[in-house]
Image 1 (tube, one colour):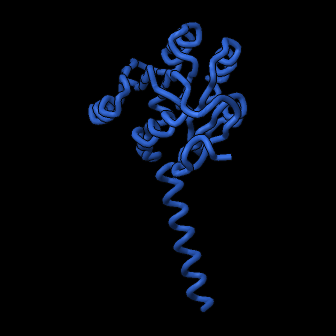
Image 2 (cartoon, rainbow, N blue to C red; image 1 turned 45 degrees about the vertical axis):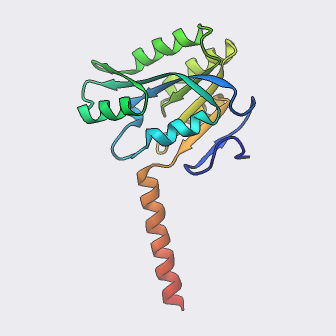
Image 3 (cartoon, rainbow, N blue to C red; image 1 turned 180 degrees about the horizontal axis):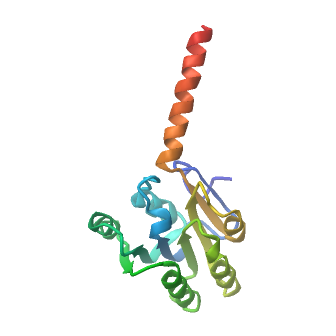
Length: 178
């Protein structure tokens, strides 16, 4: 089941198309996904998405509170940072719809957890685009995951910390039982 993308972040659900043949527009919902507590590596995300094809358009939508360090990190990973005054969702949606109606790419990847983008996924599929959603828990919309052709679930720093704590507790239990 995980034959499309390496399982080093958590997994992918493969539904359609061949490995590596997509021309992808990737849009990142920065305030939703590029949060300190998630500790997500854009380099690893890029590598996962590039298993499906080539990223032709890479935009990261950030709000006015984005630090200069974050803006620089986004740019260093090859994404174009777009700093938006206020809520980024509308700007991201407008850009996504322009991409849906263009012939420049055949796949749309949205890095978000937000159900608000469900109509964009539906329209992209209607227009013949392959859809990819990239998200993380908590709050990764099940409806968004079910609508997309590919789903990439990222492990966050929080999840890794919880797993390490659980493994530590397990080892202590095993040691106490010995």
